[in-house]
Amino acid sequence: MSELLSISRLSKAFGAIRVADRVTLAVAPGEIVGIIGPNGAGKTSLFGLIAGNLRPDEGHIEFDGRDITRLAPQERARAGLARTYQVPKPFTHMTVAENLRVAAVFGAGLEGRDAEDLIDRVLEDTGMRSVRGTLAGRLPLLMRKRHELARALATRPKLLLVDEVAAGLTDHEVNDFIELVLRIRAGGVTILWIEHVMKTMLSATDRLVALNAGRVLASGVPDEVINSAEVRRVYLGA
Ligand SMILES: Nc1ncnc2c1ncn2[C@@H]1O[C@H](COP(=O)(O)OP(=O)(O)OP(=O)(O)O)[C@@H](O)[C@H]1O
Ligand SMILES: [Mg+2]
Image (cartoon, rainbow, N blue to C red; front, side, top):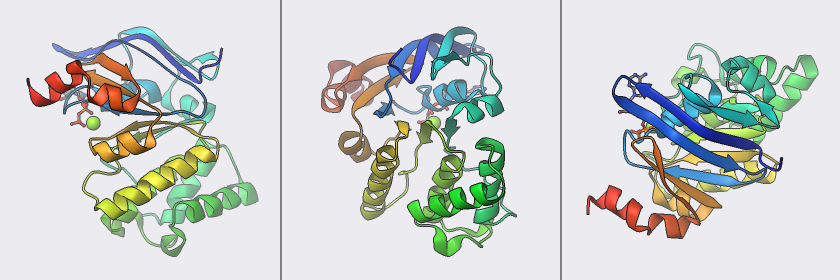
């Protein structure tokens, strides 16, 4: 078993809408795999299925050598899976450091000094030291996005699922996020990254998977996937 994550024939429907249609994909340790696809393609739903927020109708998910298909989200977090949310859901009346403490205690299973050390490291890595005492609900947009990433990192994940951090940011801020994600990977974390901002997908990923209507349309080298006939047809309607 050389894959960290292995998804096989995963399917999920909401009534007539198929958000996952026999999705098969594998992610090796240390990879950054990008997920692209038009609005409603099923990208966020796929993260929900991997993280355990959604139950699949069919198919299997193996993570770190273990079948996690039936595990609760909390158990998956303890096993080393973390996700960010497209619409962040921090505890708005708690400070940044308190939010990270919740993640370190319940996600990573740490206590006392160990939890505080991890929180300090994450604040440093994500450039959030200056706002550690700020209420999460008061953070400006860029910091809110970093905070979402920091909360996931404070669970000490092996696999990090990143759902659209670059949307709405300036070019400069996008570059900072690319650097941050590359640093996270350099620290030993494997990453699945959903983004519409193509620059991130072309400059930071090892591989791309394109989804449409819950199905894998194409996967492979980023440049080839973006320029493939299937993907161009979906994006350009050609
Ligand atoms: N809980 C739900 N109940 C019913 N339909 C849902 C639910 N969650 C998602 N959907 C529908 O499933 C489809 C896929 O949604 P999903 O959020 O996975 O798309 P996405 O690829 O992340 O899109 P976007 O790029 O806009 O974020 C959409 O048509 C959405 O409306
Ligand atoms: Mg989405």
